[in-house]
Image (cartoon, rainbow, N blue to C red; front, side):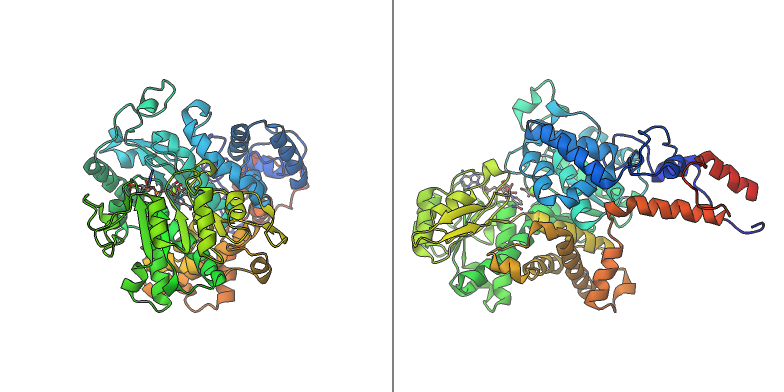
Length: 604
Ligand SMILES: NC(=O)C1=CN([C@@H]2O[C@H](COP(=O)(O)OP(=O)(O)OC[C@H]3O[C@@H](n4cnc5c(N)ncnc54)[C@H](OP(=O)(O)O)[C@@H]3O)[C@@H](O)[C@H]2O)C=CC1
Ligand SMILES: CC(=O)C(=O)O
Ligand SMILES: [Mg+2]
């Protein structure tokens, strides 16, 4: 077609920016070496001859991968195997994860990611994500410019100072941003190359790590809070300068409250441990309160742990109780937070950290309760929450008391990984005669239990983990182009989760949707987040304001990355290019990529 203005074919450089060659950076191989690609796609990508000849189906790929995975003897071996697939064939990795989310999530996220972080410097094999050092201060923008992907929509940042319930792991915490972002892709369809795992090497207070010759971070002690703040100020500016509108998720910082307050209105940012956890537990608690038959005004909640997660969760439930008709003071009075010094009271004699002041009890008449046991005997709670990092601390005695005081005690041991869970599902079910309403941070296998009345039942624990909401919060924020993540968007995500339950899930006694539905759940969560953003007028994607729920869901779905569609989408892209230059769709063997470009020039 002489004279036609042809859409330009990608140059070598452009092509490799879009389908980055094998760099070892997670999420960047972009299907380049996918053995499902037919020959003409391989030629287009210039990978023809670099993979075995056969173009195979996903079923065949899956059979091979699952067989190889089964051969791996340890959880870490399985983790490393899956990491290698992500590096070499990113779409295959996500096909496997989305199809086997229940079985594979524990291997790429909690609990196994906990061990991976503990041993990160020992098991390190390949670059994944970005590391920024305190020494980079003053040059952060320049270092960030090294990230090879042109478009990043979301980043998860940690300084490694509180990794799950495993303490300060320094840069070994990198497994967490990588794992969280893998779930953004698998559960909410954020494109893998649009995610940036980021770990800050701001030193570590972990002496054992500093003395470990294999440790891959600096040997400096942790920088001061003031130094950290200056570093974060520069980082936030640099990230948004390179990628305006980027969503920034803070994760596993030891004391994240100051950063949350400092940045929440200036950047599109949120803290997953305070806000994401708050929302996900809000969703489970809404369902559990309904099931327990005890109205909010009669709930008494004891929290072991008054840190970022404990306070974040308690605050979300206060908001829920207020919406149920309680005054804020009445709602707050339902909460008893316990930390290392016992029940948090206003007259305990220590200077309370700012984030604890809101929940400090003033009705203790000078009496102090030094332990969890003393506190629960005093309160006789209806709800027991564990966000303490202390594995096994909900003892059989405590669980039995919960069953004695309540028809259906709400028991949520939420610390991660499984080793730090305050109790496991079996203990909670056994010691409450099968009556506990249970959710844990890390998953437990279902338990079959025969109660004292002789009834046998399979009990499914809920997974009260922020992975049910952060993918949808991120997706909704990105798609609505929101300039900040408001409290109302966070609350909406938890509320949406509670309302996502199917009648079948309710009949099975679940408090959270079946994990295999997570992509559908993320669509609903994202829709509620978008609606809340619209209401708060922080969104900038105005074209979707008038859409019905069904249309908005459909709009969201069309924007989600689907690993199963990648080969077809490449085929469409190449097919369109070929027809635009007037060449027939290839029969599979006749075109080399160079030929395509030469052909375009010939036509021009
Ligand atoms: N399920 C989920 O989705 C999530 C789970 N979590 C889990 O929650 C846990 C806590 O996280 P986070 O709140 O951020 O951590 P923090 O370090 O901020 O808080 C831990 C809290 O536990 C208290 N604590 C620690 N040891 C004891 C003890 N021996 N006796 C009584 N209290 C104790 C601390 O007391 P003090 O204040 O006195 O130091 C602190 O209040 C982690 O295990 C994490 O994995 C976190 C986020 C999400
Ligand atoms: C799940 C999570 O964010 C945590 O345990 O810190
Ligand atoms: Mg966390």
